[in-house]
Each structure stands twice: as C-alpha cells, then as structure tokens.
Image 1 (cartoon, rainbow, N blue to C red):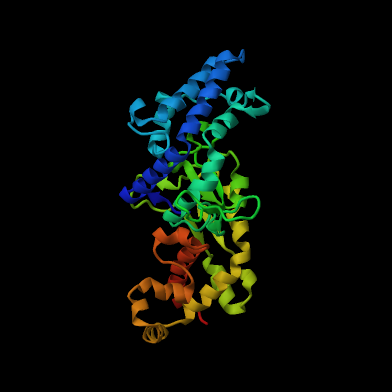
Image 2 (cartoon, rainbow, N blue to C red):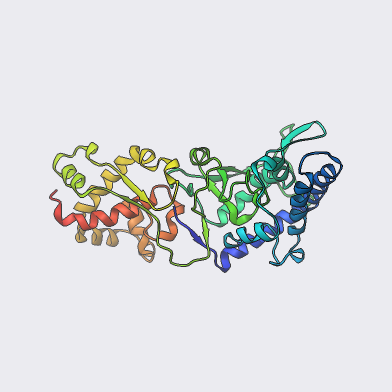
Length: 350
C-alpha cells in the first residue's frame, strides 16, 4: 500500500541481489536453459521455433553485455519491462505458455520450465528473504494488514547435525514467512520471474486472491513524491454517532482506491475486525490534549524524544511517515484515519 522509490540505495540492494543470484545459480541456470533449448530443437512440438527464440532471449539477458540496456534480466526496472519484452522477447500466447512439455520423467508447462530452470523456488527461499529485510518490508504490500517476516534458522542435515561451511561457520537457513507475488505474473511473463523489481512480497491471502490478475500497482516506482492511490476513512456521521452511543458497530472502515482491479483483495472486509483499533484511536485522538502530550514528553527518556515519531508510536501505535507504512501492519489505515479524527475532534463531544 505504499510504493518504494527506486533511488541509489534501492538500486544497490538490487545489485547485491543480482551478484548473489549469479554467484549461486548462474552456472546452473545456463545449463538448464541449454537443456530446454536443446530439447525444443530436437522436438516436433508446434511452434518450437518460437519457444526456442524465447529461451535464447533469456540466455542473452543473463549477460548485460548481450543486450541494448546493458543490464541483466535480474535488475531491469519496471519502466523497462515492456521495452525489453518488445525488443528482446515477445508476448507469448496462452497456447505457447501453457504448452505441456515432458523432459525426462517430468511434465511441466512451458512457462513452468522457464521458472524452474531460473531457480525461482530456490531464490525465493534461500536468497530473497535477506533482501526483504534490507528493504525494511514487514507487511504485505497489498493489504498492509498482515505481518510477513524472515526466520533465521540454524541449518541441520537429515540427522539433526548442525551444518557448517568451508570456514567452519554455522550455516543459517533463511526461511520467509511470506508469499512472493509478481507485478507482471510469471505465468504470463516467465522471463521476469526472478527480476528483483518484479517481486512483491505479500501475505498468503492476497497472493491467493490476486492469482494471475493484472493489478496496476507496482511496489517500486521511478517517480518521487507520488501521491498514494489508497485512502481509508470513516464517515463523519458514523464518527459522531459513535461518540454519542459508544457502539462500535457505528465505526465502519471505508476504503477507496483508483487502482484498477484492487477489489480482488477485499480490503473493507479484511479490515472489518480492526474496528477495535479505530475505537482506541478515536478516544486517544479526541481526548488527549496538549497537556497530556507534554506530560508524556517529560516522563519519557530524553533520548527517545529526539525521534519525535516515537511519541506517536508510543501513544497511537503507528508510524507517521508514509515511507514507514510497510514497517508495521495497519499503518496506512491509522495514518489516514488519524488525520481525519484530528479534523473531526472539535465537532465531537466526549
């Protein structure tokens, strides 16, 4: 529910991701792509030439020197996706993407073979979680209502023995408690399945509901100071009625967005159980005066007050900076409704 501007820091994180993926999997990816290409070359499948061309394009995009962008497919940016597909690849038909191919004893669809040989599953499990932490993303990027996290577990072999590397250091297995969605679905654009700027961490529910739908919301953007297309709010009438009756049923959390197809995430229904959060915010916002805030400032350690945002987190349970929305669940809702309650406070008698 908040976009990340692609600046020099984010690009450096992407470069680190690229280096690690190449170091760990590039040799295997190249072998896999060659195996798929050679199989198609010898096969009598319909449109095998088209599929071979697609594989060949992936092989060329694995090396920056082999394409007009001077970048590998791992770090191309959202505004370049369409250009790369048009100039180097081509948009495959559903018929070609879903062509069933048997290699050895395994049957997979063509797009599944691409993601398989690009080691998407391994990269998602073993490499991406640490970069999620570097991006400081702790919540689903679509609903902002669920925590996502990475667990750092000591790796063990099948006998329960701790695994150590060649330097005799304990190997840590990073396991992500999240789903990895794609801005451009990997079932339709498999060449982007491991591209850093195409990966969107989400909760299980949002990933399931989105499926392969095209949702024009990319986590990453090249634009700065972009206004949010999302807004949570209470109706003024509901807020006033709640102040009079203290009935939580009066507090209906509304949500609106200009992003097409976003209704697949059922945001208002998802947020229905969080009325109690709004109720607590309501009383804190309309009853805590300046004197109470001054008292808090005096009672808390001075080093905490250096960060003025801490006071709001302490009192209201949310970050005020829009750039911090993905650090904590419900932050977008709380930011929006807090602003509204501050405006409504003079009209509400408590």
